[in-house]
Image (cartoon, rainbow, N blue to C red):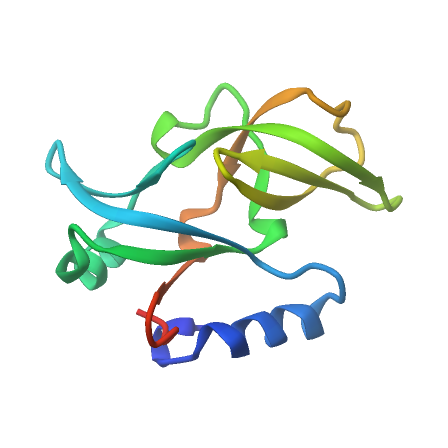
Amino acid sequence: MALSDGTELTLACAIGAAKQPGLVPAFATVEMAEADGALWARHEGIRIKLPAELADRLRRHVGENVTLGIRPEDLRVASGGDTADLSFDAVVEVIEKLGSQILLDVRVGPNTMVAAVEPTVKAKVHDRLRLALNPDRLYFFDRVSQAAI
C-alpha cells in the first residue's frame, strides 16, 4: 500500500482495518526537524531519523507538525542490534494474547499505539519496553488536508 500517492488519512484507516480487522494504524502528531545533517520526526516520547527517501519528500515540512502513521505489525520489541534512531520507549497498558501474536497497547509520550509482537514476548502491564519500527513502512499525512505526504 503506497500512501505517497495522495491517499487520505481516513482512507488509510479504512484500508488498515479491512486488511486486518481491529489493527488500525497508530497515529501521532510529530514535528519535522533538521538536526545533525538528518531529518527527524519528533514529539514527546518519540524521535525517529527518517530514511533518505522519506527525508527528501518531507523536507519541505521542516518546522511543521504532520501526522505519522505506523501499522501495528511494523512495530516490534527492539533488540541490541536496533539503533536508537529507529526505536523508542513505550509503557505497556493493555496485553491481548491472540495465539499467533500478542497485541500490546502502549503509551508513547501522550500517544497510544498498538504493537503486534511475537507470541514469545514476555510483557506485563506497566512494563517499559523499547520498540523498534520498520522505517520502510512509515506514513505521513498533512494535518489539515489529511492527504498523504
